[in-house]
Length: 149
Length: 143
Image 1 (cartoon, rainbow over the protein chains, first blue to last red):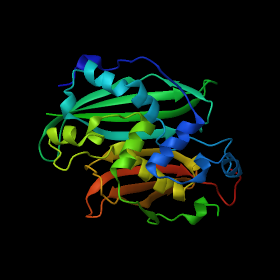
Image 2: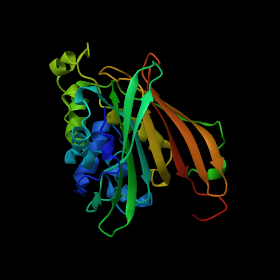
Image 3: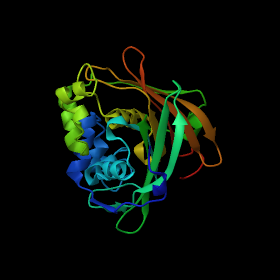
Image 4: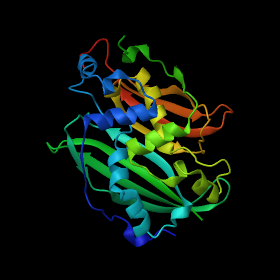
């Protein structure tokens, strides 16, 4: 089971420089053709300062930093039994090309639960609050990792 | 056309998004774009060895991306304040994801709407349930 002594633990800060091409690449992979992500002129007409990052963009710094994998190892969770249970974003400000965002992955809770089918599982909640280069909070990411028993 | 708080009613449905069938090339693109190179999404042999009979499965975040698209096709992204999902079922290449949603609450004091969203496949199997909150402009106020 997950190592409960790690509650509150913070992992190395993720620093991510937001590239225009990466914003476009993610929506292309999703199949989201909204032009605000790729056409600056249209984005500005729609009230943005530039092409904004799409709603799930913050999955990228987390994945590239490998912070979830690091946490899974550190918490002594069985990798083969891990599921991504939940993901939640709170948006405070738009993220634009050229922004440098950073955040600290933090273990917020470790809970034992029983699934509907009666199976025991541990749920680990991680949170990252991202700020930009002006120290403005841009978003909060909450991820729940489930370890099935 | 601008979407105003006053135009939204509790119980109102969000426009439905029906996605193209998910394919493996798209999963490779998603892996490259997101940095999620979990072999479960890319390598059929690996996925089969882990008990996935048909081979690779789709990243949950890729399906969440589709839900995000459905939301922001309706509510401009700049108005979106919160978006959270629970992953409840496995998605596979070939699945046709349909995203539906419904307004469950609105608060006049801050022009906030709360909506439920669901992503399911062509057989009605639910992949994602979630909700989002958005603050919309008012016809009577400058926001």
